[in-house]
Length: 419
Ligand code: ADE
Image (spheres, rainbow, N blue to C red):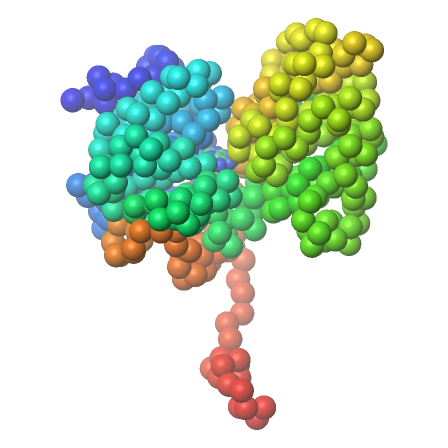
């Protein structure tokens, strides 16, 4: 059967546009390119059905095609209905991948797409945010026995997987790709840092320099968003509940304060916590007129849309991806991309070269979990794979580094002072 016969997509005639986007991304993803050549020779996924639930844009397509080149039969669904690019999905189907996704799917359609992905009876999964793994365990526990394992991309997804594992509910091994150094040090920090501001700037066309940017959450993503705001000339305030991270933010040179105090000052208020209800009525009530609100956490629960709607006397769309909420006293707040991940729902996601590293880790994690016997549970990425990805990226940049001499190696591993 041709993948088109089984797929649920918006419009296959969009494929040429999507193919151009994929080709552009592929030309800037040397790590995946190298892995694709290697996988073509070694066929590590031959005879395996691989389900991919990620943000469906051009870089993700390159990962799907890399897995396909390794002999895998690949099907995809979206990890967020607003990040799906219909032309890219059409191009994937054109290239032999089965797809269940369209941009703007309702919650019901989104779940239906995930169910169709499970109907594909995968042997392994690549997940982003944990929805696919959770759905399988909730609705199709008997199918878990067919799954050799998988890998998870995000902080949010790994938290959910660990909660499942703690209850003994997780029935197969999942590699925590997010915890690899080459993931969160670069993707979360530099990828989110750049792509969040790209999303905000292309959506609003407003200047950042001279304004106040409030960043709620100082994990690796928050650090990146704050640093880029500073680089763009903003005054930066950080809100953080963890005392160590809050101290880190203060010593990195940012003002640190609670959300209700920071909200009074915000020209841009960006949540990036992975938690719910971070910006609620008390903060919304004190916003300045014209404040721009955006979320960069996985789910659209960080800024309370319920409280926003409750406070508003009028809501209207004033630009693509910009909702204006007018309060009773005339103040206006602008919510970007319905409070969903602003970098993906209102942009193209992380820069290509950054996702090249993340997806190289994903491809290697998939091979790792399929070819080694891990028990059910959440497992770290083998450090050797982290180092391999770092080396490949350094190679692609033309950066050379020194090697330890045998004497230095010995010295590092000895407790004798004269070693
Ligand atoms: N592009 C594809 N997946 C992504 C992710 N998880 N974050 C940012 N950009 C992406």
